[in-house]
Amino acid sequence: VIHAQIHGDAFDDKLPLLIDDQVHAARHRVESQQGELLAAGGVLHAAYGQRQAREEASLIGSVSLVATLALLHLLFRTSRVLLVALPVLVGALSGAAACVALFGQIHVLTLVLGASLVGVSIDFPLHYLSKSWTLQPWQAFRALRLTLPGLALALATNVIGYLAMAFTPFPALSQVAVFSAAGLLGAFACATCLLPSLVNVPLQPWAAPLSWAERALALRQRLLCRLPSSWLLTGFVVFCLAGISQVSFKDDLRQWVSRAPALQQQAERIGQITGFEPTSQYFLVRAQTPDELLERQEALGTRLDELVAEQKLRGYLALSQLAATTVAQESLHLALPRLLEYSQPLLALGMTAGALEKELAALQAKPVTGLDQVLAGPIAEPWRPLWLGTRSDGTVAGLISLQGLRDSSTLHGMADGIDGVSLIDRPAELNRLFAETQRQAALLKMFAAVVILALLCLPFGWSGALRCLAVPLLAALGSLACLGWLGQPLTLFGLFGLLLVTAIGVDYAILMRERIGGAAVSLVGTLLAAVTTWLSFGLLALSSTPAVSNFGLAVGIGLVFAFLLAPWAAKTTEEPAS
Image 1 (cartoon, rainbow, N blue to C red):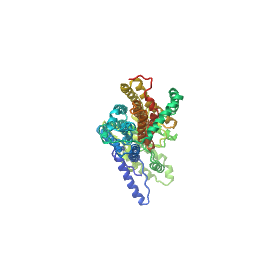
Image 2 (image 1 turned 60 degrees about the vertical axis):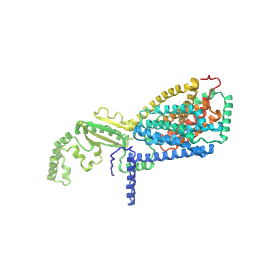
Image 3 (image 1 turned 180 degrees about the vertical axis):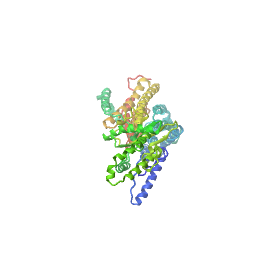
Image 4 (image 1 turned 90 degrees about the vertical axis):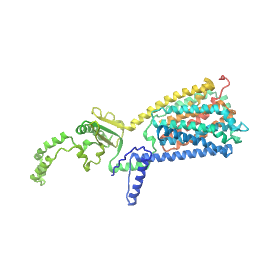
């Protein structure tokens, strides 16, 4: 068994991949000699997660962009329309520049989720390109002038929604929010200032989608004549309440990294061979002197022995198992002479009294051994990393590592009554941070919804603003209900996905509310925006990383509801003009 210790951060962008490459090279050398090498460690899982995330970001971004461009080329029948990829590029560069400027680096999850910005960035040019179905002869600047108020309003609501997430206490979520907000600003600038001059050519889009939209609106009207909106809303609310009641709200650090079956199997085999099954939890023990440290570790070890006896813990390593206190060693020295009283079995085996007395004298002559001396011996190799030495304030510190822990909750309260002992449970701390971030994100989104409502009141009035805001909120509730029906938990990034649905869904409501070019054209534009966005976010549901998959699933389902509910944002005949 070779224990290796890295000098750096396991979440460093390059270090995990470097260590992973070294392990692969060592395995190749061992296997070339007909041997087998097994390796385990958090840094290897971090390297695997980084590789998977980068590959997924590249694949998802490429597939969504190619599929979107192919769809637009099919609909508009000109290669000039492929220039809508420019806002995507500008948006990605703007987001990356903002992250580097504010944070100094870009988290790998930001790249994965940021790759999905493709669909949202393309929505801006699609809003005025879709008007080519009715605004003939087509002029890009004319369509832009007609749709610019709605585009600006959609940008403002999206940026408000994203920036609300930037104030959460979780750094990765804040970085994703900054990346997305800056990316949307860059994409909007490109779509309104540069792109119209590049696509200002005659457009004759495929006519079939417009006729499909007209039939869909006619079918919707006939449905509403038979089933009033109040009945449909009641049924939808019942569906949501029943689904939400089945949702489990949980977050776990393990959801951040895709599982590596090969690494897990190697770790299990190492545990079977060596009995070494380290956990993420450990005890930190502080004291004024090494002797006091050993006494406190021994007191805690007595309690841990009970967990071992109950098979809730496989074992542990403590410095008190290896070394004895000065008092204990001195007591042993005082007791050594009495050993001759019990030497009859040894004499019966052939030992001479002189040999026993000589050995006893040698033991009595040995001085008291300090902890540093004990740890310097070869037998102390497993315990040596547990000694943290003397601190700057003169105190000493050491660790008690745990192996084969079944349930971390059994450790809470274990150190009560023992001074200087602290339980270090980083996964539990992060899970509490996730829960707190969820709570704050929900509150921030409520505040953002109030701001968006006030902003929508300016062009649409209170009644119109409420209808526009109700569309994304109901879409988010529908997505949350579907997670419950599918047996999926709501993770932190799943919540972020729902909040994103509320931001994107406002765009669809605004587009249907304005009805530039007619209701059917607005529906076609909404469908194009939904499809291109779904190609970006919906594909994330296929990610091997649970947190990213939950995010993609929440957004993908929410976009479907947002599109279906968008026509209800249109102005009703009895609604007063604003």
